[in-house]
Amino acid sequence: MEALEYGRWAEPSISFIGADVGSLPFRSSTFDVVIYIGVLHLIGDIKGVISEFSRVLKEGGSYSSLNPLLQKGRLVQLLQCSEDFFVI
Image 1 (cartoon, rainbow, N blue to C red):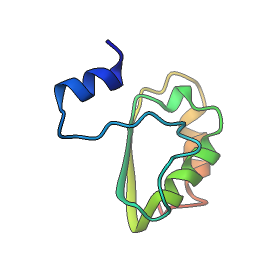
Image 2: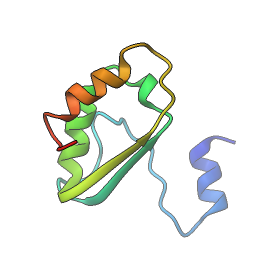
Image 3: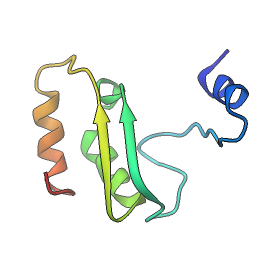
């Protein structure tokens, strides 16, 4: 069973949407919080993705990440991109 199918089965009261993290299908200023877990090592264009997170966050919103650092330099790259959009 795929993740979306499982989520819909396990929690029918929640809407599950599959989307490209670099082009989210939501209006600007939609969310108070963006949380991403375990995907940092899969993202090629970190700056573009953080820009997209910034777009969908409401003013004063925040994002949170929990990711293993599997590649050298990814944390530094993430922090360098983040300072363009957020106060760290």
